[in-house]
Structures are given as structure tokens and as C-alpha cells.
Image 1 (tube, rainbow, N blue to C red):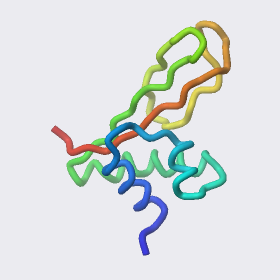
Image 2: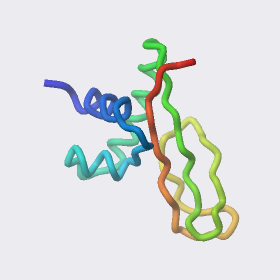
Image 3: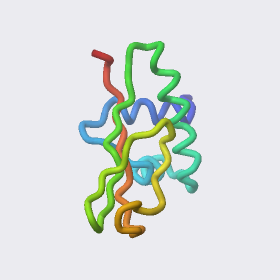
Amino acid sequence: MPTRREKITEMLERTEYPLTADDICRDLDIKDKSIVYEDINHISKSIKNMSKELLVQPARCGNCDFVFKVKGSAKRPSKCPQCKGQWIISPGYLIRPRK
């Protein structure tokens, strides 16, 4: 039986569009998004040895369309630095072969 991280990795490899932590939580019946963010951080490091990479669609503000920089951490930002709004559209993730 595959582990939770193996299931997440498989989901991110097979999807055609970026998945958010909310999507993963819903599909795998996980209650806490912080677990998914920790798993994504771990997965991004472990797939480097497999000639794969984690592609990130950056989070953005739903109020002013500010696009956040992609950092080392997979977590969703809490507040927009430009308009101070809290309507943040979560980042999306995909795994693809490294070019």
C-alpha cells in the first residue's frame, strides 16, 4: 500500500493542471493542509534524484492580482503585501520530468 507522500507524488505526476493543497486534502481525505505542505516540501527534495522537478504556479492575491514569489517553502501566504488583503489564491503544484 503506497504511503501518503507516494500518493501525493503520483497525483502531481498524473494531473494535467496544477493541484492546490486543498485539492490534495479533498482527494486524499486529509484534514490538515499543513501536513500536505510538509509533504510537498519533502517530495520536492526527494524527486530531484529521479530527474523530476516540482513546478509551482505561484500564489496570487484575489483582490489586486499581486503574484507572490515562489520561495523554498510550499506554504500559502497569509496576506498580500501590496493591498494587505487576505483573499489569497493558493499555489498549485505539478511534477514533471526535468528538462
